[in-house]
Amino acid sequence: MSGSAFTRPAVIGAGTMGIGIAEVLAAAGHDVQVLELSREVFDRAMDGLRKRLSRQVEKGRLTAEQADAVSGRIRYAESVEELADRDIVIEAIVERLDVKKDLFARLEQSVSESTVLASNTSSLPITAIAAAVRHPGRVMGLHFFNPAPLMPLVEVISAAETDPELAERAYAWLKEIGKEPVKVSDSPGFLVNRVARPFHLEPYRIVGEGIASKEQVDRIMRAAGFKMGPFQLQDLIGIDINYAASVSVYEAYFHEPRLRPHFAQRMMVERGALGRKTGKGHYRYES
Amino acid sequence: MSRKVAVIGQGELYEKVTRFLTDRGIEVPDTVALDLSGVAALIDLEAGTDERHRDWLTVLEENLPEHVPVFTSVLHRTATEIASWLKRPERVVGFSPLFLSEMTLLEVSRPLQAEESASWERHLEFWNELGKEVEMVGDEPGLVFPRTLALLVNEASFALMENVASREDIDLAMRKGTNWPHGPLAWADLAGIDRIVDILSGLHRETGDDRYRPAPLLRKMVYAGWTGKAAGRGFYRYEA
Image 1 (cartoon, one colour):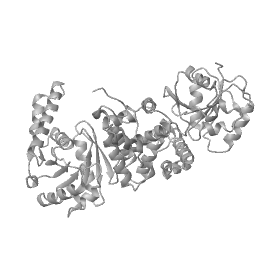
Image 2: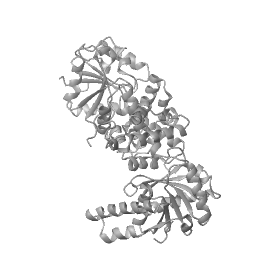
Image 3: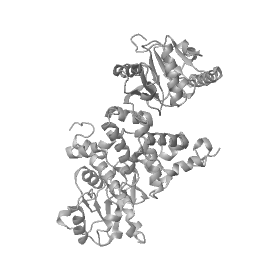
Image 4: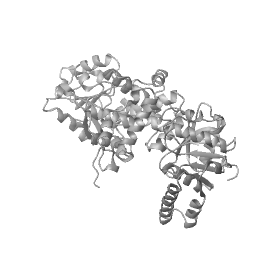
């Protein structure tokens, strides 16, 4: 990986996003350290990763050697001190600002001054996370999409004090490892979650105003070229997750009317109709 | 069905709809002569943003046989409002002319004044015979898909104005991050920036809700004549 912007990455958190990002980096040939407080969580995540890789082997997309090499490049770390030699650290822990700020402040004590500190947050301001460190120029957002190994898009987010050259480096690095990066400035919902909002919100209004049924909306939107209608898609994503994202962006923009959610969505959440995972959402699913 | 249809409108939408009809062997007579004898339908593609639209439609109705339907674009106004201008409001059918050739599905709406008209649905056979699946929805500007598209474009336009990302990155992100068939800005160029503004301003006026306030950038693009691919320039530049 000569000439690469980063060669010694670490990921913090072995949840779905964390292990997914680790897989992306390992598949690109990097040795990745994954910091996770619970060894058990890490081991479970690695088991899942190996299962996914062996399915790829069965399908003939990877050789057994390649699959072993990918999982072999991911190493466990149990404390921030072990990350001292890393040149980029990507945080993918719980979506809580206080917890993230605390982690970034501790990270800064252990890593070198040139180490880039990135967050995979989807809903918190990078600018607020950066405020926890003494050198905020090295803090940025790298927002991967779930599932990270399959979704090519990564939002490269620059906060108020992020070094402008950093976005360029991260952008080049992500391209090199086969991703499709986009440069985004730090603002609520970043890019995709914000611009996609009307696709999820307006259909509630259209149905609520008696203009069309849910089935009609989905049928019309599919006929217009979308792979799935908005209600089908929400059932897949999870109506609660989609609702939380909507509320978070709406609040962050101080109640901008364009982003106003609809009470019908909240009622779906309240009655536990969350989509496929609960067997019923906008549509019913046979268990 | 008679093979003659009168069409009023102008610009790219007019070209596209008349081409759709003539490709199917339908003659499109000139409405200026006011000779509407023997037409199967009057198709009104006027954006409805100015008052001349109303005058012209009422003059044409004088010359239109009474059983002939008027299919009017409801991107900017409701079918109910346009029906209120006519002597026979029950002949009005709202529809979305956007992407008429590309989509097999056609959204239509029924004016309130035609709620009790037993023969109203027969007007829709015109579209069935042209191979369209008709989807009847409520009568609001922009119906379902045009309205939703306009809001996606509007949000993307605000994001562009606010320098959240470049136009290429906005489009790339929406194609790769959410699997949309087009980026919203490229899609706006295909639909026409003026049409997008028509939908938003129509919704804004009818609902009084700032949710539908068009991004100032979209209005400026219309002033500048950057109305999309057909004009050679919209969010992107196109080779003539």
